Image (cartoon, rainbow, N blue to C red; front, top):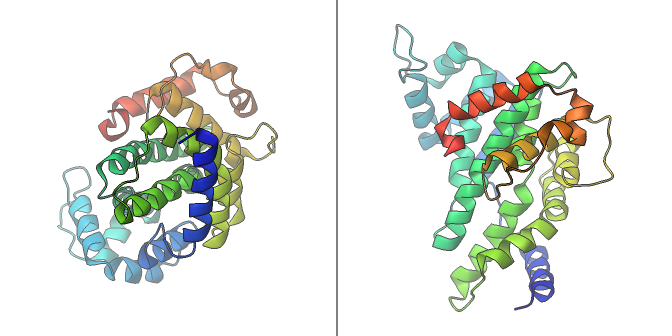
Amino acid sequence: MAKNNFVEVLKNYIESERLTLPVFDAVSLRIQMELIKKEPNFNTVEKLIISDQALSSNLLKIVNSAQCRGLVEISTVKAAIMRIGMSEIARIISMDINRKMFSSRDRQMDAIMKKLWQHSMGCAFVAGLLSNRLDFGVMQNEAFFAGLFHDIGKLLILKVISEKKQKDKSITVSDALLVGAMDLLHTEQGYLLMQQINMPNIFAVVTRDHHSQDFDRDNYLLALVRMANHFCHYAGIGLGHDPTIALLETEEAGLLKLSESDLEALTEFMKSTPTLSG
C-alpha cells in the first residue's frame, strides 16, 4: 500500500476507534490524572493504588528494594508514600503503568512499543532532570509527565493497528511504512486524545507542538520536552538514532541557555540508567 493511502486509511481507523479503544485503563488514568496535579491528594492516590493489586504489590517491592530500603520493611502503600515522597511515588507508578500500556500480543507492534516506551521514559527523565538544573519555573514532575506523554499519539496509532491486525490476520504493514505514518499523524492524534481524556492543556500543547516550527518560545515546559526529544534521538533512546545532532546548536538549547556541563550530566545519568540507555 502506498504511504499516502496508508496514512489516510490509518487516520480513518483512528477516528473510528478513538472512543472505543482506550489507551489507558480506567484506574491507570485516574491515578495519573491525580499525580499530574501540583498538589496530588494523598488519600486519593493511596486508595487508587490500593485498588490495583498488581500496582500496589510492585510499588511495595520497589520501596523495599536495596535502593530504597530503610531500617523497617514497608508493608502498606501509605507507609511507602510517606517514606519516599509523592514525587518519587509518581515516577515509580507512572513507569509501572506505562510499561504495561506499551505492550501488544502482536510481535511486530510489541517490539515497536517497547522502543517507544524507552523513548517516552527517556524524554520524561531528561526533561525532569533539566527542569531541576535550569531555573525556568517548571516543576520537575510537570516536566517528567510532559515528556512521558509527548508521544502518546504514536501509542494510540500502534494500539489501533494492533487491534485491526488482531481482527484481520491478513493485514501486513512494514516497519518503515508504520514509522512514517506515525511521524505524520502522532502530534495531531495525540493532541485530540489528550483533549478527549481531559488531560490539562499544558500537556496537550506539548503533545501537539513538540515538532512544530511555529511554537511558543516562552513555553519553557515545551522547550524542555523538545530538548529532551533532541537528546534522546541523539543518544539513540527509542525508535530513532541521529548522532549528528549538534545539541548545543539547537534552538531549544539557546532558549534554555543549556551548557556543556548540562549535557554531560544528562549523559552520565543515561549511562547509570540501563533501562534507558540499552
